[in-house]
Structures are given as C-alpha cells and as structure tokens.
Amino acid sequence: MNNSDSALPGIMEYLSSFETYYLVGHIDPDADCLGSSLALGHYLERRGKKVRYFNEGPFDRSEIREMEPIFLPHIEPGWKTSDPNPAVVVLDCSGPERIGEKLQADVAGLPLAIIDHHPMPPRSDCVSYVDSTAPAATLLVQRIIEFAGSEPDPYEAQFLFLGFATDTGFFRHLESSAHASVAAAARLMKAGASPRETYHRIFGGQSFVSRKLLGRILERAESHFDGQLLLTYQTRADIEELGHEARDSSTVYDMLLGVAGVRAIAFLRDDEDGNCVGSLRSVDDTDVSRIANLFGGGGHKRAAGFLTSQPRRQVKRVILSELAEQLNS
Image (cartoon, rainbow, N blue to C red; front, side, top):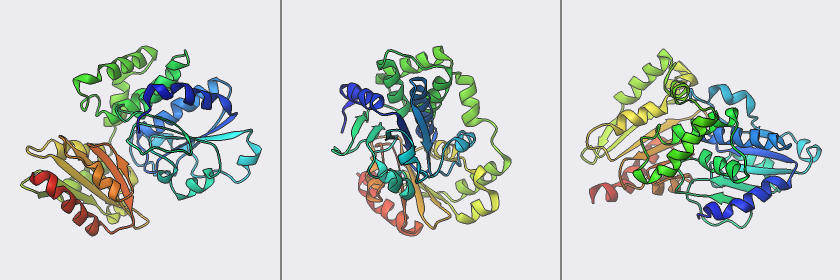
C-alpha cells in the first residue's frame, strides 16, 4: 500500500486532533526508527503536544546507544487514563505487530496512525502515511513538518539526517531518480545537520571488542550458490563474552556485500530469549523481503529483517531453499 503525499492532509489532521502522542517503533531499532520518532516528537512538542517515546530495544547499535534513556519499554497502566486524550503513532514499521508483545498489548484500543516506508497491505484500523518508494521513514517525517508550513529545527534536523544516512548507506544505495530525496537532505543540512558529525557518529568510535566480534562473524561466513550468497551468524556466547556494545551490523553488511559476485547476504543472530534475528540484504533485483515475510518480518526488496522462534539451523535451511530459485535463474 502506498498513499504517499495524498495522505498528508489526513496524517496532519491526526497529529492535530489529540493532546498526547505515544510514539512507538519496531523492536531491534535502528537510527531511522528512533530518529523519526525523536524528530516527530520534538516537532509535536513545539506545537504544544505531550509526547512519550517507547521502544522495547535492544539498543545495540553504537549510533543509537545514547538514545536509550529517552525510550521506555512499556506504557505504565495509569498513563492511558491520566494522559489527556492519548493516541499512538507507529513509525518505521507496518503496524503494532512489530513493536514487541508488551507494547502491542499496551497500545491496544488506542487510536492508531502508521508512518512507514516499507511495503504493507491495506489496513482499515488506522490512519496511515506510507510511501514504500521513500528511502527512509525520516524523510516522511520531514515531509510532514514541511507540509505544515514549518521546517525542522536543528535538533530535529540532526536526527532526520541520521536516519536518512543510515538507511541509505550514506547515500550509496540511492539511484539517480532519488534527486528529490537528496534535495531534502540538503535542506536538513541548511537547518543544522552536519554530515561530518553524522558520519563519525555512525562509523567512528567503534570499540576494540567490536572489531574482535567482526572478525569472528567474517570467519564464519559461508558461500552458497557459487558465491552469490554469503551467510554468517552471531551466537549468544559471542554477546555473553563480548557484550552488546560489540555489535556492528552495518560493517558486516558492507564488507560481505562488497565481495565480488555476491548478490545477497544473510546475517543471523541468536538472541538472549532463544530467538533468531535475521538481516537480509541484496545488491540487485534479488528480493529478500519475500524471505523475511515468511518469518513474520518485513522490509524492502533489497533490505529486510525478521525475528523468529525457529532455531538458526532451520532458518538457514529456509533461506537457502527460498533463494535457490532466484539465484539459480
């Protein structure tokens, strides 16, 4: 479902109709998820609204770790009655199904809006602003602010640019047709966003243990379909030994996708609850979102993810089976 700019008046009316907004993002958040929440929330606060921020985490990525204290893992029972006229906005995912079990239960029964740039089926239970052609959810939040006749302030601009930068691989994943998106990023720079500071926040200051973990993950990489697919994994023991701060998924993606002949990669992680978290990327028309959908996840054709209770070995078998037709064609 795409409703793009035709939905802007509807989402603006929703963002004006309530006094309190609960902003919620998907589990295992990235900078686009949290950046869009923080920028939209700050904008709503400038308009006199009360805002609360929620995310179940984990906040493992280095560029989002300092945001963790802002986000709460659940809604306190009394808030829905004490907060004046509350409503929910889910950002960077297709609905409450991906925000975690606790928060999904918390927001049940409240008015709902979705702001997302991932493909999603039509929904009749909410207001939605969806554009799957947009490279980042932060771009949609920027459109909302500008449609209202305003412009992002420096605080909002830095988070909007951060989310845009991470989801586009710092512009590397954009085609020539994305000139309007680049122009939007330029307006964020004019508003105060610094590409230099953003780049350092994403890629600089990595810990020594993160490099050790990166080495392990690369060493485990398996080649399939004559080198067209690289698959690797991270174990619970890795995190127990090295800690959550060692995670650097973006570098894993970049290094594996940079191998000659690779069309797709799969990175599987065992979490503390016994689940398997999967991240899938491709560099051509290989559609990895089809695999994520099988596990209840989602995303784009070239970038998708999921969380499943199925064991990693079984997940691997499904990935190899599903990609066999695409990569052997």
